[in-house]
Length: 209
Image (cartoon, rainbow, N blue to C red):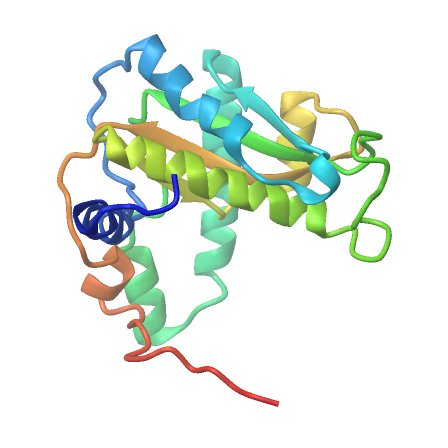
């Protein structure tokens, strides 16, 4: 398609604004077809050298979920100990994971040893494989949001411990642990901003050379 309508462009802009990182989920189970629709967006994503380095684990068992939750709780307590005063109080009040409630949880990895793509573009910048995985996650995030679902990216984790608990190959590197489900509420404002942790920059800084 050569040209999209103004309505489409406006809708895309709204979708990106509503993308928000969700941490408060309803516990309603998700329809399997809807989950698959979101995951299928990975097949549309670009990747360096067409390497498609993403590896997806659906974390479904009680054992694996409990291990991931305990991982977060340990890492979160350690992170809290690194703050003092007002910042510590703010941190303690943040909800940084929806792992207790989210019906769908995904561990997204990058296969750093993949032969697919024959190393094109990754020989000089091997990190491009991981950037490709991040780009694919963004497509899935927008797809999920377009269907009314929310996603939350849990970054307060020990990846080495998670890799061991999920028994992943040694050449896989963790890119994201994602929670997905129906959000309890919707907001255009990041929760970190509403809680006073940080604010968005008022404008985009661009430099020239």
